[in-house]
Image (cartoon, rainbow, N blue to C red):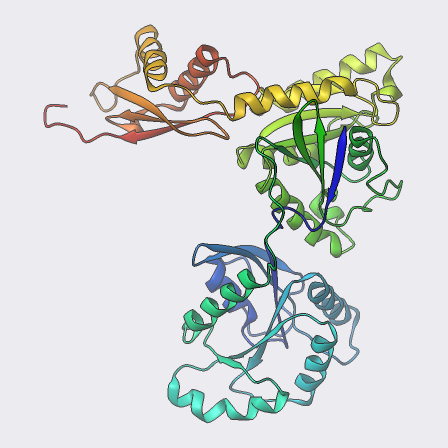
Length: 457
């Protein structure tokens, strides 16, 4: 088996952009405008944003993670003020690009110079945004004084009204794209890419070490060792596998060390670029609510999924406990019943030989294509065997179906009243497609689309 360590990641995660500045300069307003959300609390009271908020921003078909931070106050204050400042500096450390927002109405303060000095020492690209500039006339009046900070480029904007934002955002996403550097190595054709997900200390790195036959990952008993995703490419029996080790996802209330919030972001970003998700569960603890949430992430992303119960050697001699664990997993994962469940021990190798064959099988179904003729026979047989109910007194008509994509197999089904298809009948159709097409280990998607109806429909 050949092993290659790939650094940086083959399809690097989305960039993280941190929005920083003093309290009440308009950071949360800009965050809400760019993310089209109201997650950040907007209030004139300094210090309202005590925690970091993060959300995806899509601009010009490019995507990045924007992080809103609490206001920076350089002087030592009370415990909460100090925590906010520490969180902000952590955000600066973890981000790829910094947006430093200044108050165009209030002008410069001695604290601004101090913050700028700290930001420059970070070595990260910094964009200077002068907020509360509502037009060209105001821009000419207020902007010149901010050049005293030593930046050649200032961006006059209004986070409340949108002035100047399009110009800045166009430049920002262009900069993010350019910062990607040289093209990343290309994956060999047919590579199966998979993310190893799970709570900290569940054995993700140990399992990758077992599969590669080398101690590639840092294995430690201290939860949180893996801070970012790491990619390893292996080849076995002529097939390539990309193994993406990720940071453990903690339950939200348990994320005490703030760096782990960014690890969660990068973990979910890693999932986006993989075909399959391996969700590891600790046999000594059984399945938890957080495990089901991680599995839910994989399902929402439409990824193939394999549930791996690790540390099975700890219950190897306890048949009653084994049965209990598997029954708990079955009850907790009914929403993703197609996902295979494997029991292994990354430490001893118990059951590990069945992992790669199972992954191949899941991937084969995940990427399978079908002819339109076969799909329409499945649809016809399903409707004939069980007719749909009426919709507002009118008969539902299913016309035809076709496959529009793979990974996962996605089928477009044309019907006269898509909104009239009851959820139970939709689920019945999905099950018919699964059975007829032999897709029992991969997600599939049925998209109901309205066909132009004739007057007599």
